[in-house]
Length: 393
Image 1 (cartoon, rainbow, N blue to C red):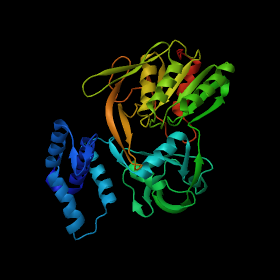
Image 2: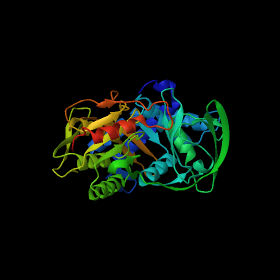
Image 3: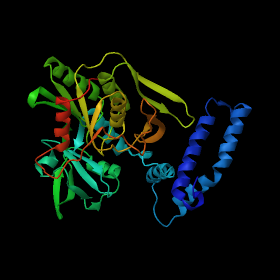
Image 4: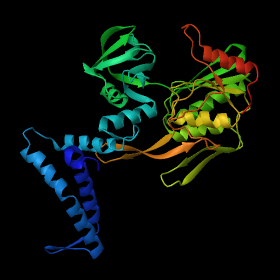
């Protein structure tokens, strides 16, 4: 463990892990009168764990009993768990507080309590608003996409996870947001409310071209996408544009299901763990007959990149900018106290074996958004491709 003797917070976490090991070693023990009986192997495991974590136990007791400053066991535990995950120096492996778990589950379900803001971290490390959900508290207060979130409840914003956690809360409670737009700062007070937002929206454009936007990959995304795609097939659309711009990912199985709806039989994605053990995820022979184009940008990440990479390898067309490059998968473990850990456990690759992590997926037609706020040059290029040489799935 890095800097163990200099990091009492991380030390306490190791002690708590040791306590869990000890509890596991005690499983199956039998009590007979005033003695506890176990087999030799279990006893040796317990003894080794107790010896290994003795110093850590002493440090915990020092902090709780002798520190000049008051220390709360639960607060120490949360901070310690967070410290241990940070030693991995992996931006995606992190400790999840009870509030963060609740917020994540609400976001994936499509029903949440908050203010109706989606954010991303821009190239300068600032938190920028990517979307404001219609009829939300944020929309009513005038917050717009592109605004920079500077403070929440008067405190400077930290990571995107910290900011998201601060915005979630109980319905009816207030939160203040200070944001910057065009060099000017403004602070607004918002009342959190129930936000219901579909992860998939669609519309028919001119010339009978369908447009489907996938904002995130939640629990219902694949089902919602299938419904919208089927409706466009029924209308015999000339083609469909699938917009993954600003989509930071979500549930991997939902991304795989959407790629399956677009691609014929073959590999969608494969993953590898630390030992090189490979797992393939394949599509069946059923897929849409519509021509389609994917829109991607620098905020297209994770599960969205699984779709993008599979479509590109499968002969589909990507328009826009190189994707973010988050080609790793996290496993979330939930604890009984409502907290959890999100740990990076696997890396994923395109069907042809291309690495995506820290590289992204390069579009077939590279196009920036342009400087005219009234025009979407990427969307225009996708429409032109549908009308011209877009290939079938």
